[in-house]
Image 1 (cartoon, rainbow, N blue to C red):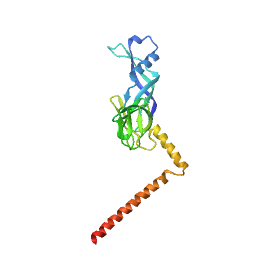
Image 2 (image 1 turned 135 degrees about the horizontal axis):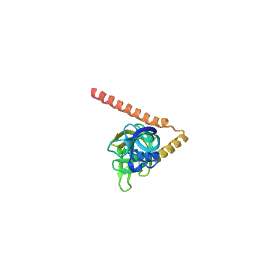
Image 3 (image 1 turned 45 degrees about the vertical axis):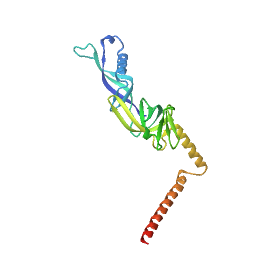
Image 4 (image 1 turned 45 degrees about the horizontal axis):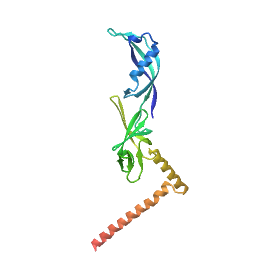
Length: 222
């Protein structure tokens, strides 16, 4: 997750009823109320105003009883990036996909982006079940995914992720995959040697197909 510590300059209005309080404390409280959880297209979501670094001289605007100060703050922001690998917890399962809590927002993993298998929603278990693999995914499962789309618009961060790649998906899937891989290694089988018989079968199938075509041509000529 991409978190950034940034310096932000902005104007803070101190209302008249707070003139007698320590100015640094008042401005920090007002800044937190005004800025935290705001979404900016350039810097992402402002998670927290950590400190006030500088307070400028106050200015009064005619007709306004407040005092305006130009201030500099240290702010913690959250801005995910496309292509970033993220980890989180499944917080909701629906018939169209999963919502995964990543940092301070929820990302959607559409049902088509969960796995190469076809998944269907089981309302009784509130889970998505793979038809061929038998794998399942449900609420509170921990997962790893990759950000594929990102939108920061109208004060909202919208994130979509995919788990259709190696080393992505449910922690349980990844754990089983690692165990199976270890068993193969102990037997002296690698992924490459496992693929060779499948490749040989494909080549043999193509040869037989070509032979049948040649035979049909010869029969037509005869």
